[in-house]
Length: 158
Length: 311
Image 1 (cartoon, rainbow over the protein chains, first blue to last red):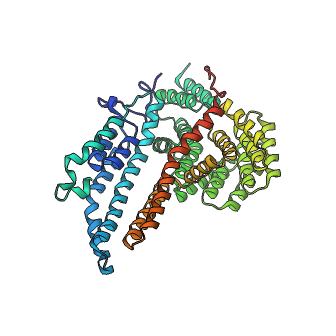
Image 2: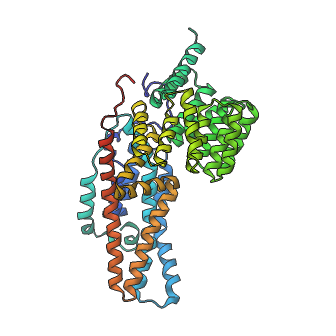
Image 3: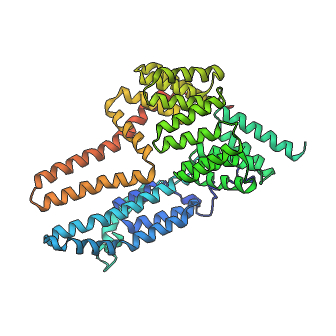
């Protein structure tokens, strides 16, 4: 009896129509580092649906956090650094650090959540696409999309 | 043959497969048992324990819950729920399940064994040792207890007693992979790397995915190459921290790097910032190169180890 027609264990992959487009979770993480959240977040969520991740709603919540937090963190850090009398450039560089950290934190958690179901999927013979071309496309084409200059969104999506 | 007999037969097969280190086969056998009787508490519980071994936490949790729902006062469901809670680092919940298990089956060492693992995970080694010694009194021939106690003593440097326990377990079951790993660890601790490696290869020839066997082999290889060994020690240490803490450690290092370069640059120490940048670059390159190198070294070592086709 195969896994498909017998008792189903909760974390076993349930291939859907998007199954052919699954990538290893490290590709969206790499795209976060080389292209930015504008590519990484939708890609990670797409991957979650494609592989039928059992934690996909948790992953959606994480992405929502990554979209909601950058501005409050940036404003909070900017204000906190005010009394130190630093130059604007120095202050701006410091403000960006916690914003980057939050994005990386979410990226790593998404990677960690998707790794389990992905490994299991591979165990059952599921194949995956190579995400390198999309990462490279994001890296080279991203700056031309001008996401950084969209008012209010640059900090969140770049 | 009626349905109950068929289910029992699948459970027996699953036991035999699990004992032989064939976790995948055992899971399949339990799946077949549950396809016939989806409310079989012991089948759910055993499946949960196998999934704990495979670190499939989500599924293990679901199976343990189903086992408890089917038989709230069952021995195996309590054992499974305890180990799932332990894997989730929910110490109080794990303790409750193991204590209930002790009350349900005081003659079995499983409850004390669970408590010992809990104490060890909490870093309370002395309490873990006491629980294991009590478990040994309950059943002096339980190889799991002998191996756990031996491992604990080995980490404390009590090699002679650890070796004695490993040999005692092997006298009971000469193919006990955990006992072979323990003996290998004792050899490695005593500096006999070749003997340790031989034991690791022996274990992996029986169970190619045995985590302890692979760890032992990696530890042996790490002794051979100090540069790649550093990577192994780092990975092992990170592994003990858990994935969430691991992510925070990595990002903590990144924050230290970022803040130090920004502060150094902002205070006019560009040269020092450059040094920090180079240092970070070196770490990044090392973390790319070292795992590949270590894996190549390991693959070379594992090349003769193959799972039998009919396994």
